[in-house]
Image 1 (cartoon, chains in turn green, red):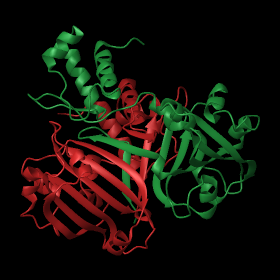
Image 2 (cartoon, each protein chain N blue to C red; image 1 turned 120 degrees about the vertical axis):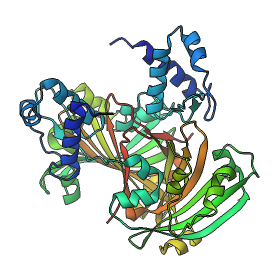
Image 3 (tube, chains in turn red, blue; image 1 turned 90 degrees about the vertical axis):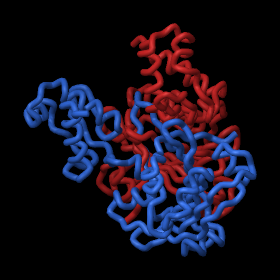
Image 4 (cartoon, one colour; image 1 turned 135 degrees about the vertical axis):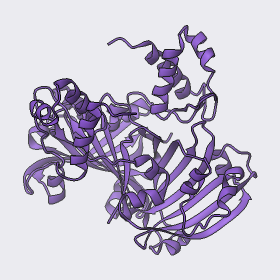
Length: 247
Length: 247
């Protein structure tokens, strides 16, 4: 599908923000200047501004110049699914060391997340993930057997699980993540090379295909100091991030 | 602005998901059934499904029934800005105990976030926040003086800062949050009534108005077990949540 003119204008400005030509707090050129720069009428320029505003990248105010609020990232969906894709997108070398690959009965929590009966067999893959050789996360992925059987012949110390599944037409289309703070247990600390009690960012992910069929449920513990999570929100735009207080 | 027909259909289904009539994994009625239910042609029903898909609430697959993926939450922007609004939206009683309200020179980090010179005076408000009487978070908000002067006459043990500012036409329009995991220092543990070393979810927020002018920068530490953060992502839809590995 060919991009519309306003999408090209938005892509150009997005790129300028992401590569640091424009920084947070900087003013964008005026509407008239943007029209001249892109050989465009006002309509597409305004549409481009609205798109970037919805993405939380810029502010738009009547009569004032738009200013840069935050950077974005392209290709973020695959980066959200796969740690390998995520690290590569950031120019880092992904690494993995398989600690467990097994077919086991699911405990109650895991079964619940995969919408299976407790005790149903699942394929469990546990790996130490590294970035440029530094321990990053302890990753545990649970698959229903009909999905997980595809990775039993995979070199899980070398290859990306989700790339391998995609080659078998199993593609993640929806992702629900739950983020919380925990501290390293002795076992986790030993694997991650950190201290017992160090803060870890726990990310639980349920991945499903376009039909809503669950592909995997994973429970990952990241060394907190080795990553940041940022969220943008804009008034009037639905936000897929939500905090819920426990009752 | 009057809602379009597809928006009404989407709102109706969203409500059924949010109030639990429809649960995660449930199939939605067929397109034909939805057309009959809403007295609609196929166009608006399909548009409604696309909207809910973009919000990460349902899956849509060719030839298959749509299924429910996750709940959403209305009014989430004000809930993102104000802890008071957030707790009320979840039916909990917000409480606050002011620990500090002062005009002080900003340290380098705070000044940087507010785009001020280090040493510039800022208004600092630090409060223990509670939910239904239980300690929830240690909140510290920094305001530029021309904004913060408005809260010097506020009863910060009773009232919402952001409601008070909105009454003075200072309205948050954009929010950038950074989430990480930390552990409680002795001072934080004493205030929160938790143990030293307990996991805390740290949320740093920069709030700006529609012109990109900074209204506040805050640094909040939540008792991790008292809240969850969930993120939805859908292939083909830009996500305002992003994880970044540190270099």
